[in-house]
Length: 287
Image (tube, rainbow, N blue to C red; front, side, top):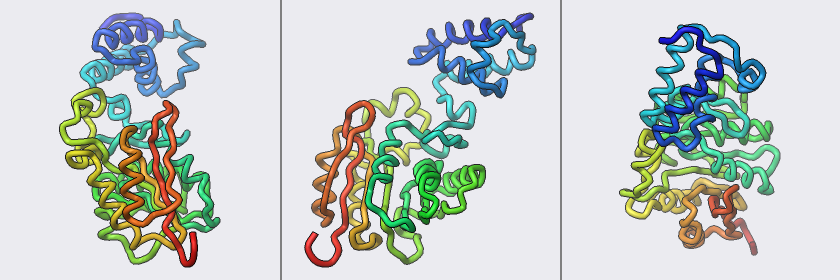
């Protein structure tokens, strides 16, 4: 341990180490980890770069940097992430919320739904999508479900921290353990990576739960199940909205069409890739 560490000297050393480890955003990672250790914002680093850091904080910070150099995701090191501007607790029991998934939230909010809509988020994980929707539509009755007890415990913790009484979480393996009833909107960011995909051995995916990522030989097993079973749980003229891989939009459209959904559409994420596909369950009379 060295004497007289400053904010800038710590960041410089950490950035150099992270560059050597191959991380894509070394300076950003260094700053996020120091924010976590010092419980401050990045503005502090620009305002007081020469501020001294205690030996205890310096040592603890270097330990965090080592973990990141070993590949552990920032969200798992700090136990926190941000989604839809909401602070969320994270853990290795769930996927890390990603900006791509905000496309799912955006499209859900654009749908013509009643003010008191019943909404189901299948495979909720941290609760990110359910909580984002609940934060925007206070009148909606939003339920997040997940087969993982650890994920449900974490989602409930996030819900309590954010104080969103209209959002609840239940343990269920997809639809199997849900209470009877139908929904105006079902959303899901299900597993959609193909078994054996090379990306599973790269970056953060190496550390995330396999069951939340992989869905059969072509990555579509979970989406097939949801498309097949959703009609029994959705109201007439209700909507199903799914996140998927950027090369899967055509296949998902076909699956929803075969299941009987109409008004099918796909939408692109911020990178311009198709990320979300949805459709409407027909009601009585002509659609």
